[in-house]
Length: 559
Image 1 (cartoon, one colour):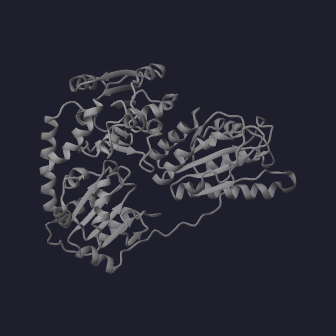
Image 2 (spheres, one colour):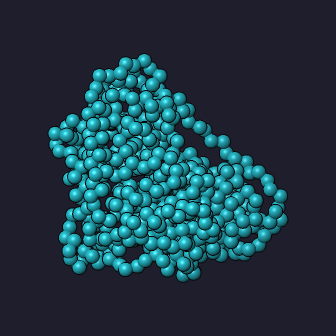
């Protein structure tokens, strides 16, 4: 087997294999040649070549998001590494395992005016879980350096996997970079890592607190599909003292759950808030999209807030009282293993009646409005085939999705760690590359154009679909407070433009269709999901000046 002559590269490649890191996203360069040679000549690895490092970072993130396993990124020295930063921050806050492997020049060539060099150690600051700065191997300390480097690499790979987040391995290479040798594969010894004992039991006091609380609210953030056992979902759904609030990204479904939080919360007054305020709030999952529920719980704080997560916790509502460091199913197993009697409570019944009324009003409102963002989302979501993966852009896209009950066979993902628009398309394509499900990606126009290099990619499946809501600017800013009628607003906030995605579609060999009315949208969607030899893109043009008022009026109407 052909491998690089550089011992450092050999160690990294073998240890990645030992840790079952199979997917390697490589951006072309010279300084990283030893790594590129090693990974691409090894049958174990699936390697992807993505030129744009910023897009490559999100592409790798999409793969890791689906597999829930570490994915490696490999780049050359200099500014190439900095382009990973947006994806690294998203991975950090979304708890997605990425292994950034950056090639570097030897230390004596840094900050002396040599080309393509920057100070690479500590470049990601507080946004990685661990950093391994490897050292050059010299004859006089060869074995010592190899042992030290291997230990650092081992630790980085273990942390990425066990704590689900990004790590950085910085690797200095001296020239020559392209020398190879024929080697027999050998197994490097792995350090033994102590595993935490995952046994968990609620205390008697905690069980009593749960059982005596007549108003329990469970709020679920970003959550992988099929993550919670059905037996526990059923028990929660049938308890009259519990309401379960889910988001589009929660991937949890039950007729008794409350999937459209803003539809429930936004029209409430102070008396309603008092009735909705929980005695006990239980949260799990990642970031929460709904600003309304954040404001409500910060203003109407429960006496008790428990959060379940095996690693870390965010005190999002400023009232956290207990962090349970365990898996969610483990927590519910402990909760339901004790004898308990159903409480007499009207908490669920009261708010379920409100939910039913809101849903009737929701359907009535949709019939009364002209073509707009809101109307377009209604038409789009009705036509997504079952068992698709739905990837969502950020900003207004994910917020519109929050207002609709989605088909429960869909799996939904969105970059909510940092909530940026910068890499949504690249993430969706990375996810689609390794998923056995066909994928539809719904995004706004600014987000799509911002990340258009995502289509410069040789791995896009032919069943990949993109739907762009083009309202010719950042429509979400019209919903926020501020003067919308000034030139300053349209230029620097909304960013008005006349761009369309048709030229980009032709450049990257996508089938292109557009729609500017509800009827045109229905027609376009008739054949949008049929089998094709290349991916498809549908661009939906909506009236930018009307969308904000239609959305704001919606909340008054459902009240």
